[in-house]
Length: 412
Image (cartoon, rainbow, N blue to C red; front, side, top):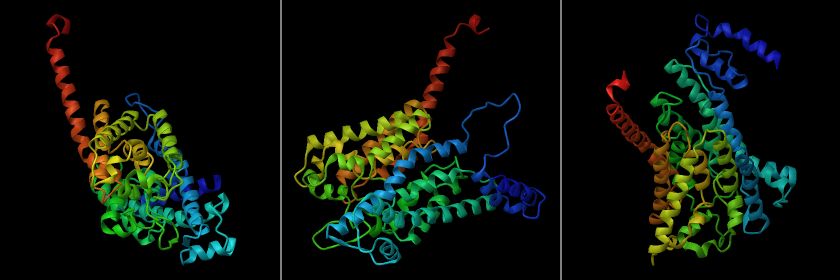
């Protein structure tokens, strides 16, 4: 690696101020900062030092995402192989199936090795497309705006493909991540300035622009489902049939993530691992997570009590909401985004509870769109600054009132 380090150092003079490629410095910096820790350090007695920088923060979140990424590889292939091997689906036509059959023939057994290999043929292209397109958009924006590149896209690049179904066209992936980076982040000034979550904004764009591929009520497994069988997500089926539709899947299987859905969102267990890592490292707020949980549970319990003769989703218990769709993934990784969520301690409770209430309302009251977590988080992203402003101003007034009660002699 020293050879690579020496090469980058030898080329730096061409990209720094006064060099031939000065305007292309973000291209150089993108590679340098991705491969190595920047050599620049804070100096002087007036600065507060902390061991956590942006790169460490982003890498910590990536570590928390590892179980979800592994599930994206395994469960994507497992769901496809399970359906094909079970006789209620056929392989999709295309290079992925051709490559798979070159290795395993027409054997689609849902074992670990074959499932991971099959899943990788769908997840890796989407993952690579996200980073290639999103990374270049990020660098191009840095060149145009004249600011330095940073690691802000690293986590968005991981989150975005995990929220997508396996069969989404790659050109839609490119459009979605481009929209998310530009409209959700760069127009607000770049990393740390965005109001909306980048990955969710890109996914929301795809949902409204191309609902046939991402609505959740069509086939969400990497196979052609035959007539009489359903490839829709269990959340979508629960919205149509209530608790009875969930009798064919065990709660624990849904908790582990062995159900159809977005590639990295199906496993609540993987999300809980990530939530634990983010909480212990102080990157994700447990207050926000608990607020989301309590808000969802309270609202769903209210719907269970009210009941409905026309909407079967009213009778689905709250603990099912926790393991279906993207609830757990959104609670752990999206709601706790340190940039777009509330930052005051009291505000985190309100922000989290608002997401929980909203997701239950969207899921149950509007069963035409049974997911809800994405829209709930984006909705509360817009209210997070207002929530924080309210508590900050209340704290200022309380402190001012307290100062006014201090005797003059004491103040002197």
